[in-house]
Length: 313
Image 1: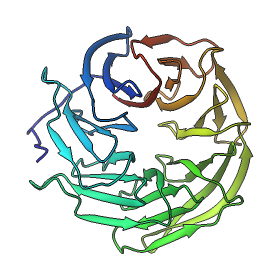
Image 2 (image 1 turned 120 degrees about the vertical axis):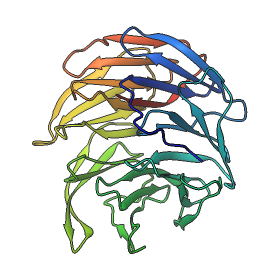
Image 3 (image 1 turned 180 degrees about the horizontal axis):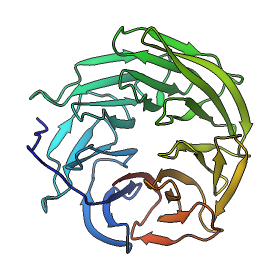
Image 4 (image 1 turned 60 degrees about the vertical axis):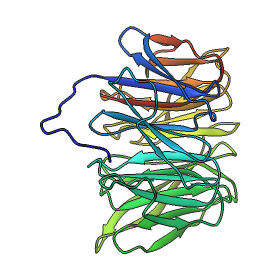
């Protein structure tokens, strides 16, 4: 059971990375120092997520989600969630921290109740293909998942109803996100396109209306992410770039790039919406000012590609 501490407050800023070298690294964002390294020997890390109270980080890999205590000197996992047959590609938490969601190559989206003693999923939904990405609506009752066959499914956790969005192209969905205002849903494709929908609620159900399609990159998109203030959208790609788009008109605001960066796998905005952290195949994580061309800071220490990044302040 993930225990809650009464009155627990933590103002620490957390930056955590993981990748193909089977290690998880904990960084001080303000100076780039790695203060803790955790071994994850069974497999690469596919995704990372920090609990809302900043006590634990969840790492999803092959057949397992392992939870690590952020503040403990013990490098072993505190909890091990299993019962999955293939790679778990995505993981996240409800705002309350009471439940966790995951999805993966076994085509199954799972809900894990963190208030119980059991380490097994208590609710699931099987998609038509391997699940590549998930996002939780700010209403905390609608999960969006994208899959390898190009479907985007909205799963209403209250009614258990599912609705599928039609896409312009039959292509793998690589990343999805919803802005914190609950106004936009974005989906990134393997072709380099992004599609956007506007969202509205009707009788407690989230409805969508297609808004725009953008040829964002000329290669595979790996991540799309809205800024905390909903004013910006970041897309990262196999073309070595991070592109920053304004949500006012969805015009390109800036392109961030390092020549040696290779694939940019993951990203996370800082709370000020003016800085963004990125994770890349060149073994480095970076902090950028969204309006500048060079990174503010580089985080070095991984021996292989960094494919997952989690940040919380």
